[in-house]
Image (cartoon, rainbow, N blue to C red; front, top):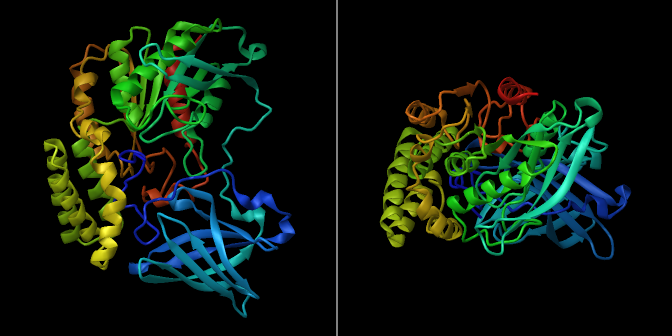
Amino acid sequence: MRHALASAALALATLAGAPALAQMNPSAFDQAEPSETEIWTGAAQLPGGAELGFTLAITRGAEPTATIDIPSQGAIGIPIRVESIEGDSYVLRIPAPANAEIAGTINDEGDLAGVLRQAGMEFPFKLERSSVEEAGPRRPQTPRPPFPYETIDATFDNPEAEGVTLAGTLTLPDAGVFGDGPFPAVVFVTGSGPQDRDETIVGHKPFAVIADHLARRGVAAFRFDDRGVAESTGDFENADTEDFASDARAAVNFAAKHERIDPSRVGLIGHSEGGLVAPIAAIAEPNIAFIILLAGTGVDGGEILISQQEAATRGLGAPAPAVNAVVENMALMVDAIRAGDDESAIEALREVMSAQNPTGTPEQIDQIVGQQAGFFTSPWMKRFVDLDPAESLGRVSVPVLALFGELDVQVVPEVNVSPMREALAAAPTSDVTILVLDDHNHLFQRAETGMGSEYGVIEETVSPQTLEIITAWIAQRFGN
């Protein structure tokens, strides 16, 4: 799974060194009566005073079941194996790639206490009993029916890509409030990694939230599953950024054909890697009227990787020598990737992981490297490290809104804003707005540190300030 922009993959790998667990559907909380399911919430103590928060849902019975939620890793409702239940003692197994064991006993205070074992290390934990309602992270902004607007599920083919049929949801403003249109519209482009139409991450659905906000203000929206994801067909793993730009162009042309959408006022909203895709699509497709870049990049992918890991390692509280070692070895890895030298790239990756995990044994470092090596030597990565957004930004002729989060550790504003501004200053467009939002992270949540570990625990999906800026900018230029 690609995480160059979707998460700072190296420094933010948690659960004592395992990569983030993949999100699965749905939680087993609903598979038994509430009275039969025990919910335990708390944290394991990691080296250096850090904590790993998690929730267990354990259902007793003839065939006991359990799930685990780890919000900081985007793991929600992950099934785990019940090795044994003896009285008030439990032994649970988290499957590969984590390969961890949870062993605990209910103590005299009524807490579930024990150790989490992984890769030869032990981390003490204590969990408190809670209810089903308390266990799951709240997502108050997620739209829920009935909606005060029209939604239409649709599929369309990308004529430039054989075997690619994309599925999405069109959101149209309420005719009773806004009339029959035609309306301005936006088409969403997701960040890196296989994403569904809502760009779902740690229970948040940012694209659904933005589309809902726009529809309530007279702007149509179309969001679609990435090729090969959810209801869309096609090969995601062998696709690159140019392929995603082709899908975005096809989506714009499909949405523009709807009778209630004005084909002269259809634009793109791209998040993260989507902010790299949007300008590529815009310079090749004359029907794209504007682009909105949310944490779009201003430098090539190699610099993105280096700045990500520098910011994330520093954010984890690592000392200066460790941060410097990560930067130096990330630079070596990027050079090796560019040269097509996989062996040297993996060796540099090993040095990065050693610097980020100074207490790790050689065996533990080998395990982490083995989990990450395929990603950093993939064809997509080899294309990404050399892809310079200035080449497309410098040719954009339509209005541009670019937003950055001050606390973003994945697309670091100090690294990306100035190069983007310079590239757009040389472009044919005369309408450019670039804003850095105080106290916002990569997902445009209001945050404290900006680290990925906050994404799942913050209830807000997209800040009201971000939503209002996007809506006002569109209304000023393309409103009815």
